[in-house]
Length: 371
Image (cartoon, rainbow, N blue to C red; front, top):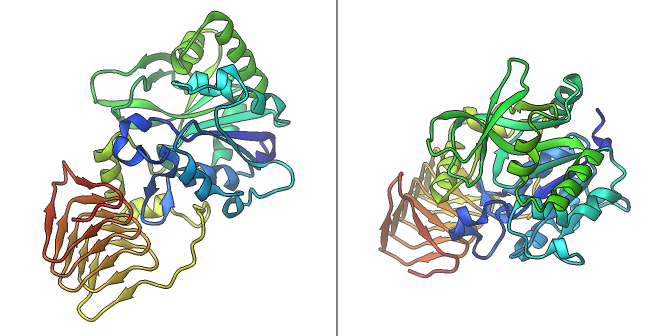
């Protein structure tokens, strides 16, 4: 199937409440990740790598940083006279108020969906970090003559409200579905990547509105398991869902493993992001970095180990940074030390200060804090 026949729809505020420390001033989609990316970059890149040229980004609040990051969509080749990228804030419709769930958000985008010339719609969340060929998923969909195909992954159930887990037949058809299981055992979990024909989605939305339904997974997917052919597609490679600050920290740390990095960042499927031209990182006399991801524009005069550093991080002489995620503009003063810390943008740690969390309880420092 040609990607030109698919329109994308991304929920940028998905599960904001699960990561309040980082989404207080931004959407989930614009949360920094991996040193130089934002979370929305991964799904946007998956789409454009497949040939999708029309993408709607649903957002309801705190989308200033998202607008700044996406701009006209040029880094993803979506700055076009026709189609391209559309930011869909809540306006011009009663259904498009300050929506509280996925179905209300979908109804808010009804006009975007209805006016799309593409035959298929691909919907996904921003808190899913993965890189795979969506063309393989669309091929799976047509091969099985499916009505709906849902991207899934195997693993422990993330702590996300109303997250579907599935039981499937041998051919991948979903036979049973459970919402928000209380256990956290190994299950087959929805990655909230949903693929179907546009007309089917519009029909299901109209039915949901007429019956007063409020939940996409329960009222559209679960209610139609026996009526429609709904299949689960196993997303290959590195696929993770961020469900908390701890999960955010853990997944960043997973990128320090070479196999995980090569699975997520591969030559065949590049991850695009907003380009910020900067000088290469500078390592001063005595500066040292081990097993770390360090973005452009950093100055390392101290020691950095097992950490992820965004652009413009400054580590002074004698400072020690271990097991940390430091966002843009963080300054670590002379002879200071940080361990298991997540610092938001423009944090300043003055000389000879020491901060330490734990790998199972990282310490978070809010944006612009001076310690």
